[in-house]
Image (cartoon, rainbow, N blue to C red):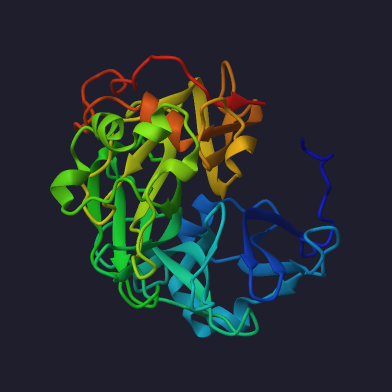
Length: 388
């Protein structure tokens, strides 16, 4: 049940409008951060990109009582970005959630339009969008920003900390792109530097792109892939073979347990409109081996119709409290824009389980079509997501 909306009256700067919220929770201190940008007056992003006149500020408010009350806004622009701001035509955050690593590092996804060159009279010549991350290693007292994804054009993005079965860990970034497909990039130093981005041709973008969300969760112990080849096999078929207790709705305690030294690899769920032509048909895709760009399934469409931005959350529920009959303890929540004529008529909330995802994704992980129509939708069987 949702409480009434509360307006965060302190999350603003005078004569600025607030945009691109990015909440982040520090589990070590119990502090809830809300990062956002503020933009002077009604200045549009496009004007800043064309002229190079950056009027965007990096701001934050915090709460120590789970969001009941909030601090006044802190303008972090000079402290965190400093003189580098002169090379950014503009920048923004997320939008959506930030993450915290096991080390305690806090990460806020972001992107900047970097000024590549100017004409001799100062008129802007060329800018390129690049994703990156702000990070803090002292629970938010000091912040830094990492290097840009170096090669491909990338914008709005989200991050996942990915554990791999060999015991290694990488930071995964999934970013919006104007190139027709999503871009993913990996960091092996927790976001300070990202390796070269890769196009993910299984995840299409509409013209000009659209924000999407990613959330990581530990793989069920009854299915641990041993190679990237396993990750692109029929997930539902594997589920029927390897997750019988889950799919039959039996008690989760019946599933085998790993050794105490075993590291469960991370799977990723991704939400985004599924059409390459327009912002329509909100769907979720699953990857069981995220570093492999070919590992993504086709989507399960959770909302048919105009839809746009979304944000995902992952939770573990006691088995008997699972919101859907026959569900598992692994559950997801998706908050997304949608409507009947326009994607921006309302914000809806859907809740579903990993069981639902495995039951409703297509039988094989094949590449989406790039024809004149939208990509083939997910399996049209019974949908179990709860919509409000």
